[in-house]
Length: 246
Image (cartoon, rainbow, N blue to C red; front, side, top):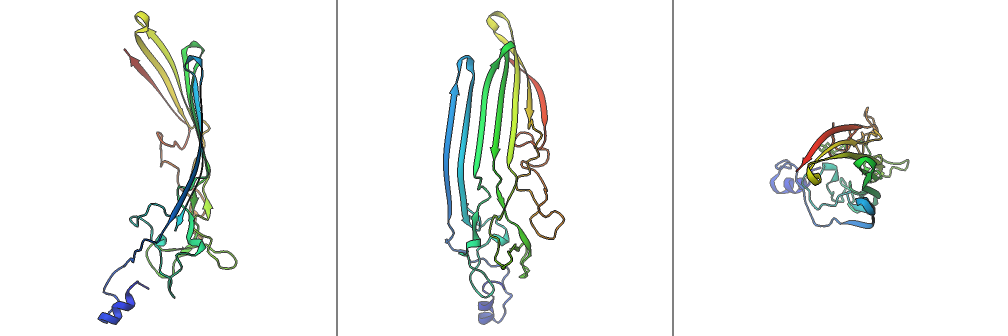
């Protein structure tokens, strides 16, 4: 049932004068808690490394924390408690946001090896982010509206009731410097950049989430998109190059 349909019928004698109507109120709230640890060490010969660890929680009403309705799917709009609506304060309407990443570790360094070889590895690990499983379309017929899966007692599973796979990316840059001219005035660096050394497929939260579909809880994409390289490569990739300094 559309909001205000009864009022339109009562006032104008026609309940279909308006299309979808959203009644918005500033009642949503969200919480983000974070603890950050950092360790950095420098050695002789320009060798160094740094490790960062983040422990965090991000939760919100309808799993939303950005404070806007623009671009939010229909099924995440708050609803008004009524015979045809639900309770926006129900416990299953509060859950993790798409950015609820419990643990994240990033590490990088620069190491000078014999024969003027430099190695700069980077590592990123993060636990899986949440996504919501649905049992199918809402009988209301509202475009895009879906119903959460329920347990044996008929209780909704809640926002963010599933988790994607962990993120793990290990990459490295290997360089060899060649010096020319008086006092090494000119330098040519030959380098190779190796992405996703473990050839890991990082699906993130790209999984089918509607029961009864062919892709339900199966991977449907990758973090970073198809063929991504610079952000989160979805397979092992390598590129070579030369850099000249003078």
